[in-house]
Image (cartoon, rainbow, N blue to C red; front, side, top):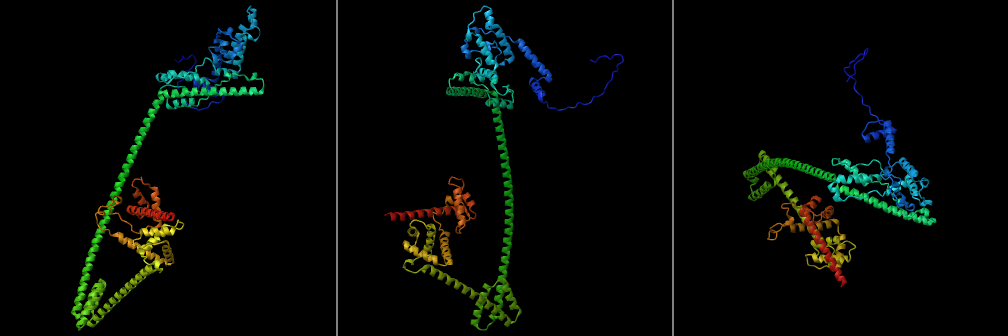
Length: 620
C-alpha cells in the first residue's frame, strides 16, 4: 500500500518503465565459492552473509557441544590404548569424526580440568604413580585426534562403523530405504567431495548412470595402518625395522583389498536390485526392438522399391525386345519378298535366255554343236547372277545374230575359265592335305615310329605336357599313359616315346599346329553327333541347362586359370556353385565348366595311375 504524500510533496505517475537488461557474469575467487554454496543450499546470499552464517554455526556448535562422560574411563589400561575409543575418552562419542579441531581442543581442556592428577590429588583421590594412571589415556586420545594423519588412521578403523552389506533379498523389497543409508554411510571414505546421491525412482538415466559410475570407480582414502601389529620404532636394528615395515605393508594391502571388494559387492548388489536399472533395460530393449522393426520395414520398403524398379526394367526390356523382334520380323519379311522377287526375276531372265537361244537355234546349224551349246546355256543359267543374266539378255536382244553369238560365246568362255580355276585350286588343296597326312604318318622313319596316327601324336603331346621335366621315371610314365589311353592297340615303350618326341621337336611349328587341328576336328566330329539311345534320351541333372549354348573351342591358358581360381573360391557346399563358376569364366557356360572339370579329374586320375604303375614296376 502506497504511503500518503505529505505537505509539499508531489505525486508523479509514469505510464511505462524501461525494459530490464539481463547481464551474464561468471563469479571467480571467493565469490565463486559463495556461488557454489548458494547453489548447493538453494538460497540467495552474499559471500559475507555465508561467512557470517558459517562462523555463527560454528559458535552455535561450540555452545551446543555437550561432552558425554565415558563410564569406563577410570578402568582403562594405558598400555592397551590401541583398543580404546579415543572419541569416547574425550567425551565426543556422539560427534565422532565430524568433530572439529576446535571442539577436540575444548573437550580435551574440559577433561584435563576434571581428571588431571593434581586436581584429583587435591580432592583427596588416590593417584597411581607413573604412566599407569588413566589420565595417560586422555593424553593419548588427544595425541591421536589432534594429528590429522593419526586421526585419519583411527577414523579408518572406527569401531562404531557398520561394514555390513545388505543382501539381495533385503534390497529387492525396500531398495531405497535399505541402500540409501548404506551408501551415505560409506561416502565418508570418498576422496572426492561431491558425491552423487542414490536418488529416487523418478531419477533420469544420466543421474543413475553417474551414480553407479562414481561408485564403480570409487576412490577411498581409508587405510589400515592403525592395525599394524608391530611398531617399527621398537625394532632393535635396521634389518628388524625393515622386516616390520614389510609385514605391515602386506597386512595393509590385504585389508585394503578386502575393503575394495566389500565396496564392489555393495555396488553390485545395489545395481542388481535397483528397479530403475530394470526399467531402463526394458526401455532400451523396447527401443532396440522398435529400431529393429523400423529397420526391417525400411528394408522391406527398399526391397519392394527394388522389385518395382526391376519389374519396370523387365517390362521396358521386354517391350524393347518385342519391338526389335517386330523390326527383325518385318526385315525378314522384306528380305523374303526381295528374295522371292529376285528368284522370279532370275527365273524370268533364265527363261528369256533359253527362249532367245532356242529362237536362234543356239546360233549353230550343226546338231552336235547345238546340243553342246544347249549344255553351255544351262550352265550359264546355273552360274550367272541376276545382273549378269540381264546384261547378257540385253546384249542378245540389241545385236544381230552374229553379235549375239559372239556375246554368248564370250560369256560361256568366261564361266568355263572360272570353273577351271576353281577346280585347279581344289586339286591343289587336296594334294597339300595328302602330303601333310603322308608326312605325319611316316615322319621320322624307322621301325619304331610306324603306326603313329593323329590320335597317338595328340596323345603324346598331351602326355608330354601332363608329365613335365622332373617327373620321376618320366618317359616310362608317358609310355604307360599312352598304352592305357591309346585306341590303336600298339604298345609303346620309353625308347619309342623318346624317339617320337625328338622327331616332333624337329617338325615345323605349322605341322604341329596342323596335327593339333586335325586331332581337335576328329574329337569334335566324334562328339558332335550322339545317337539317341535309352542312356542319353533324358538329359542328366548335372547338365540341366537345356538349350544352353556350348563353346566347343579349346580352353585357353587364361580360361584354365580362371576356372581353377573359381573352383577354389566356391567350394562344394556353395549354393548354385556352377552358375557362379561359369560367371567367373567369360565365354564359358555352366555345361562347359562342368565338362572341363570332369576332364581334369579324369586326367589327374590317369596321371596318378600311370605313376603308380611305373612305381610298382620299379619296386619289383
